[in-house]
Length: 223
Image (cartoon, rainbow, N blue to C red; front, side):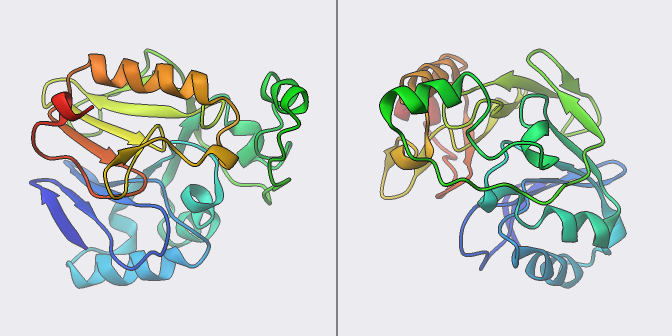
C-alpha cells in the first residue's frame, strides 16, 4: 500500500486495474477492487498499514469490468463495506446482462460487428446507485459523480472540486503516456473521447487512473 498524496493510497501487485484507498473521518473508502485474486492482497496490505478489514466502510465502482469488480464479492464479504456504483452499471453487476450488452451499446456493437467478450458476472451486492450530479459527502470531503460513458455505458468519474482531484477509471489510461482505453473493450470510442474532453475541461490538478500512474503535476495541460 503506497501513499500517492496525503489521504489517498494505492495498492501494489494487483496485476491489472488500480485500487485506491481514501482516508475518511469514519474509515476508508476504496475505489474499485481489482481482479478476482486482488482481495487477499488488498487485505494483507491494509493490515500491514495498521488497518482492519472492517475499517473499509465503502467501495466505489467506476464501471463493471472484471479488472475493476472481479474481487468485489470477496472484498465485500471480508469488509462488510457499503457498495456504490453508477445506476447504468447495476444490471451488469447484478448478473442480469453481460458486459457491454446494455442498449444502446448492443445495437452499436451489432452494427459494427463488434465482438465484446460475453462476460456475465455472478450477482454482486449493490447498496446504492449514483448518477450525474450526485454527491458523496462522506468521501474525501465531498465527491461529485460525473457520467463519463464510452468505455462502459454507466462509467462514472468521481470528482473532488475543491482539491481538483479526478478519479477517472478507464476514461483514459496513463501507460507509457496518456492514451485511449483499449478499443476492443470500448464499445463507443467517440463517446469516450467526449468524456475525456469533459474531464479535461474541469482542469484537474490530480488525475487517478484505473491503469497507469497518477498524474500529480500539470495534469490539466497534459490532458
